[in-house]
Image (tube, rainbow, N blue to C red; front, side):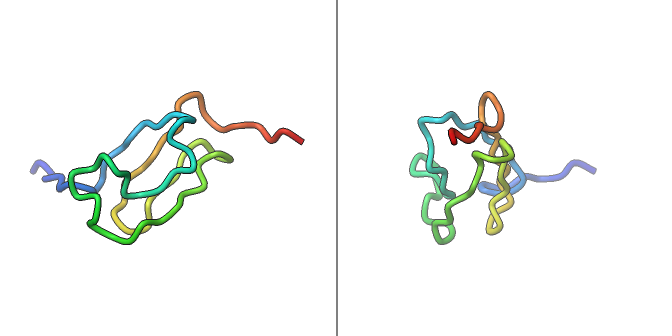
Length: 68
């Protein structure tokens, strides 16, 4: 049986460094007001999961190094 995917659920979105700081929902989403805005720490692991809608964000190029 095929799983029906609804907007802002169970999807993967690739983002770039120009999208940082990352928050969900993003302004260009159709349902941009579907849940409270939450900032996601994607820089360390290169990916982040929204706790509200389950959207997985993946950073192009992977995790960013620390510039210490």
